[in-house]
Length: 469
Ligand SMILES: Nc1ncnc2c1ncn2[C@@H]1O[C@H](COP(=O)(O)OP(=O)(O)OP(=O)(O)O)[C@@H](O)[C@H]1O
Ligand SMILES: [Mg+2]
Image (cartoon, rainbow, N blue to C red):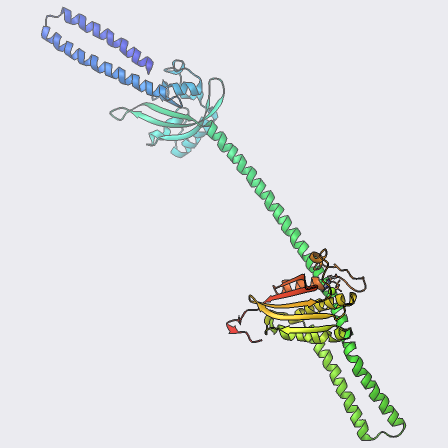
């Protein structure tokens, strides 16, 4: 543009000098003065055109961040602004009027785009036509291209191409405005890389999670299996407990039956057995056997396995267990007192609840016996607190050593000799209360003894009905 305006200015001065020369020779002074006025006007418009051109050039040169490249209709470069020089490393003088934009385009890219446009518009599009084909169909083309700089570097640019039309709509040339997007592209590429890395990390984490989940579920299966084994062992211990209780309960009645039988034999041998005496002793023996059979039923119910949760009275459960263990307590001089502050009902598995109570009461008995406590006492208290049905079992056996207090619920933790304790009693009791019945089992030392506290939710109503104990 700079060169064009210089050429234009030279042509104009020449013409002006020639007209002035003509006027001086002419006899038609009027015509000459009119010509002079016209000349002034033309001079004026030339100056303003030159000023406009200069400011347009200044604007284009000021745009150092964007490359503005104009071409003739055949693609020859006509404008190459400062931004274009900065971007591509060519000087405007090197290219204007001699080179086309294909000079700094990647041929393969032009070829590929040409093929696309050829397919789109059903005619062959190659070379410079590739950049202007879309403008001929009425829209400006905005695309990313690779520019090859004078020094051989590659740049990513975003190029907008528009047609320059004259007053009559005829295309005078084309204008391309290109912006360097190399950095943006690099940033995008590194963002993509980061995203890929992130995705990889996410997949790795997911894989790890799946592996962990699998390990956890395997571990859970293993734990459940061990739990079942422990509970099985606990049941066997409870069966042993039951057998020894039955044996204890039966000792007296069995003696009585033996006495009756011996008596019958004596009377029979001496010939003194009357039919009435026989009937009477047989009836007595049958009554005793009836009682013994009742004991078995009672005890069997204590360990009944319920498939579904039942609503049951805590007071009755405690009474049954106190009765069940009575022989082992009173026989060793241990007093068991039960303070029932109120009637408490809970929902859960009574058989398992009985089991937990037995384990806790047996521990109290064993502590009292081991420490040979005089006036040994176990006090059971039943009450409600903040919607919980609470049973506390306290003994005056001296309490649990503070150092072992945090471990007493661990499986196989025992301070007793092997033959006397497995260390499963409290572990099982906790599993029953906390896992099966969503309650809490805790222990503390208070008033010179240990206190085990069982809490299980005891709502005032069940399914909208008031609770009857
Ligand atoms: N009332 C208590 N007083 C003192 N120590 C207790 C009391 N209850 C529990 N312990 C302590 O807690 C330990 C663990 O009790 P746990 O019932 O789990 O096992 P264990 O009684 O040793 O054996 P078992 O499996 O036969 O019941 C006991 O060995 C004992 O040291
Ligand atoms: Mg125990």
